[in-house]
Length: 119
Image (cartoon, rainbow, N blue to C red):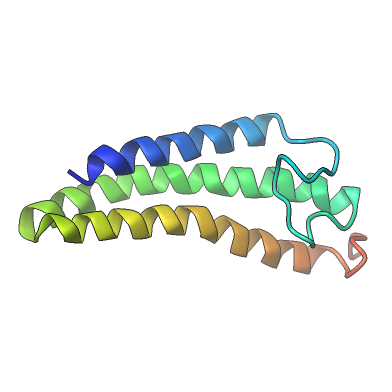
């Protein structure tokens, strides 16, 4: 039952990530794209963050579809349906927030506090 929500949401996130990966936002804006303080410091950080975050979210959506579906089926069979719903919710939250964490970590590694590339 949880798969009825998990698969469409994960596919939608994956398709949106693919769209943003292949057609990243070019200009810094407050409406569309990966918008954190660190990502908006310079055009360099903006360009990097748009592609890196979208690529990571797309890859995670593939991983969660392939690995999460059997896990949710098994949990739904072995335990109460609520367990599979909670697990699906956790998977979706991980797919949403892990790319943010890793993108911010990578931005911190590659760019200084002004948004200039570290040599």
